[in-house]
Picture 1: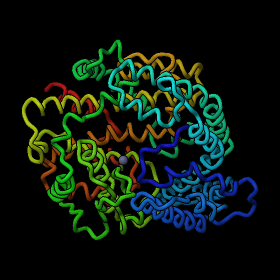
Picture 2 (picture 1 turned 180 degrees about the vertical axis):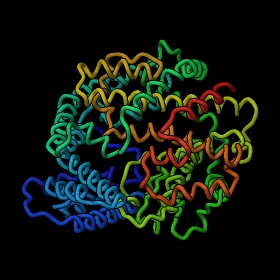
Picture 3 (picture 1 turned 60 degrees about the vertical axis):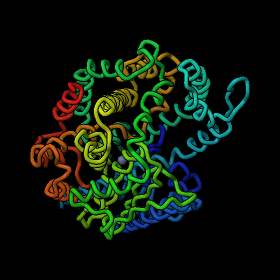
Length: 524
Ligand SMILES: [Zn+2]
């Protein structure tokens, strides 16, 4: 299953593919006591974050494998048994929860470590493979460049057929084996199956979330298809997967989001809520355009809450604004944490912090906010908002369909490729063909990561509704609203989606607020 690569604020999730050189756990006999394991993990995560920051901002070489190599006893079947025993023996509910976060952390790292060799094969293959473009052999990894420069749908479809040849190969050589191995490892760790392990790690109610997804997909279908037909220059019956990136791009509106206004607007917006990234001593906003810096916005919670860092190399444009606001959501969340428990500072699922990040990202698509901070107006603004509504619905429907599919895949239902084709076609609103559905093994995230995103979509809408009800439609101008957010952020990453929902006045994660929001947007 593909590691989540577009999500870099939790370092542990993004770099483990390279840990092959670390010693394997099966030969370890001696075990460390639980406190020693926790201390080692804390040290490792701190060093990983420090190295990740230097690599991202300064372009220094990364050697995460060497860091893992320092702790050969950490991610082993024995250490997991120690953690499992400690969870069972603990009677204090708070400590029990922290230990359970720790156990899940060990288990997910262990799974990656045991399958690292397959990921190395995957990366080597990807690096070596060649494809045919205009009669010439070019590296497979350059194909994306050709795809993003192709203006006609026919040209994109032709290039994509090369991509699907590669999927066929990677599926049979690596991905099927990786899936089988992960399923086997989960059982070896004492779980009923892989799903059981994943659901425990993400701490959510699987059946209720699946039901919410089904309901959302049904309820939004008509509106989504109408929006699709409105914004897409390619008719839906001719639409191919290779057209999607082209359609989602918001380049037409980039002039309203100039590079030199990015940081000042972000700072102004945050200070209206009573956050002040400029003055917060524990929050570093690194905006300098260093030559080797990775331009994408990212948040590194190095030490929570004492040392939280955000990096961006401003380029301007809508996507740059969206991603800075998104990362500011993460940064303010971690910088406001007050919990002394390390597991609640650094571990746990990402559903809640993603919900906070989407809340801030949503400002860039808020009509009133746009009137205050940009010059966009009239028909131009209306079109922008329709396009944003389409893009959001597309992402939501994609992730919900993906979650439903991944659950069926892990339950080993028959013919997963056909299931992927049927379920994703419904989500996307255009029919995936046989070739396109070859992504049924590569379009799978480790340990049901999609469940975190799906919960975050619902939580963001629930949170926004609560803020509007309590502080008015323009809650984002209110320091009291900021104070309310700070009171939630104080819990660090300890809350599950359900626990945040309870704080917002719901019994559990609910689809009502999101459906209401979609209806009000598409009625405009
Ligand atoms: Zn995020």
